[in-house]
Length: 240
Image (cartoon, rainbow, N blue to C red; front, side, top):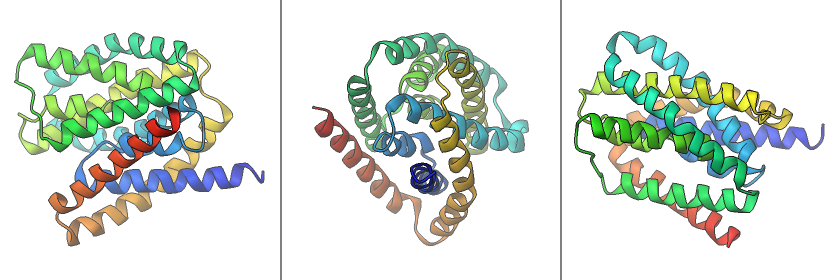
């Protein structure tokens, strides 16, 4: 019990920060949660917990905004993501903790770079299927599937963009969590982190809403990206 309590408190804090960042900037919470969790637990546990908490978060968001979902885009991105998941699972199975930590650090650094420079993908089916495939592979290997989807859906109007993104997140998370359960990756520690993370989400969103009203998102965004970049560099330095 003495070991579990600090871990649970840490998880509440991590997912509180993740929810706060997403509420203010629109970034995927996993970009914040996975790297921070790997500082206290093994990478597989971090990925499983972050994905499961994401499912809870996005299921509610998708349900509230389901009437605004671009169904065609959501189906294609979700299906493409499922097709890409086996590659991520192979990486998860073949990589030891050291290699997986380096993979997460490198992926985080690349994704932060794409978001920092405002990279945009050209619209079309090739982009949709490629982004979906990449997101699925990233989800089951690093837990961080958001950026390819964000970059692929920027052509939608804001409300449809947000709703479609939540629908794809939810659909991919359902499949990923089911696969993690089937493969025996859902440990007692992952369940503890998930339960604690769900407790941290509401407070994180409430704090994010207050920050959003007082600090423009364009001012807060560089702080979040800079912090994520530092985390990635720390992970890479520690794993080298």
